View 1 (tube, one colour):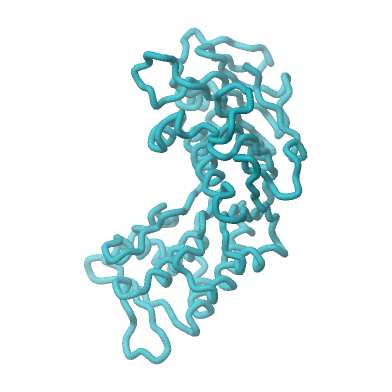
View 2 (tube, one colour; view 1 turned 30 degrees about the horizontal axis):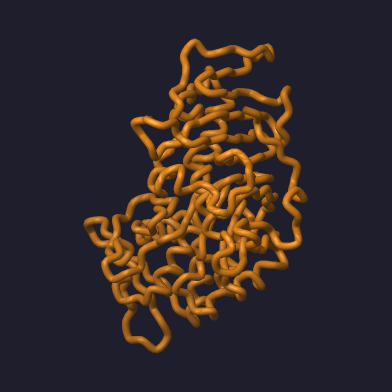
Length: 368
């Protein structure tokens, strides 16, 4: 489980080090930095599991992603990291040098992987400073790689051989088990409204496009009873009908009391379709290590918040869950069982309400 997330110099997050619980709710008024927290978590996930800098480029590059608050005299750069019980990771990114052929990509200054949640010299298992890479052998001695990394190449993308660098492979596999759900399409042309293929789909796609297959999988090999109960609870006794044609095409229908026939996915309201997507994500037969939901309340009527909260609490029994929301009804429903982080904005920087800058969990950045 991830114990600590550390973000420095990213958009409104000048310095944010906070602990995560089994279920963490991040809330706050509009403009306080909730979206920045979500994007930073996604960026950290992409860096850890793929060494990918493309996410940063898609956001407009390093200069666009840097802290946008007033100049404080500190060095210009961005640092991201997380700590877990087993393995932890941090990366230090600087601005690209003038004349670089890829001006959107940052220059990676430092990366480090260490054992346990607290960075100590003896716990570091692998690191890179500039272009130099070191790994610690079984005897505890450092080995410097004969090759060097480019300034835009991540340690995570270069070392993935489980026999030579098992700790890097392990932390990459850990991050590959993280899932993020944000902009799931519900417009009339959304793929989720079309029939699917009845194939084993234990994980809903991030855009929700394989909804029919994911719900079919839950009904056949997952918690079908809970699927039935949550649909009935959310929609006043409605029931889900999943059919399969002879050619393997699967279709969704929703039986609602008082209607003579079930409504197909193409007829459902945006809110109903989105709720079914959240059901498919939260009832996955292959639970993720970390599940992050960004504003799951979008398009949902407030009456659905209790049912959604019950689903989230159930998912938190199998996965670590982070919910980023400004829906007061959802926050209140989850608060008794969750750690709630309320974000506030002061002087251009995001912080946690009632927590001073350095009152969070213990955290040390790798030195340059």
